Image (cartoon, rainbow, N blue to C red; front, side):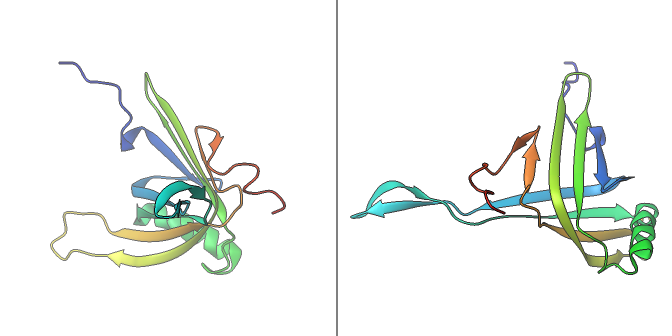
Length: 151
C-alpha cells in the first residue's frame, strides 16, 4: 500500500507575526456558543452566542529565543502586541491555510525539564484571538460580515 498524501504536522510552516517558528505542538479551539432554542419544549431554531478562539503552542528553546527577541524589542513579554498566527500546510496533493488574528500570548509553562535528558527543553505558550477578523480557514472567515458589523 502506498503512502497517502494527507497533511501531517511536518507539512506545516507556522508564522508568529512576521517570524517563522518551528513548533513542537500547536492547537487552536473555537468556542461557538450558538444555541438551539425551544418553544413549549420543542426545538424551534437557534440564537447566536459569543465566540472565542484559544490555543497552545509548544516550542523548543531555539524558537523561544525568537520570541524573546521580539519581547526584548517590545520592552517585555506583556508589551508584545497581539499578532497573527498563520499556519500553511502543503504537500504534493493538499494545501491548507489557517489564520488566527490578533493573538495575545501568555506563557503558561516557562520550561519543562526532564533530568534524564533525551528530550529538548520545551516552552508552552497560550494564546487568545483578540481581533474581530477572528479566524479564517483556507481564506473563508469563520464569522460573517453581520457578526463583525460596526466593530
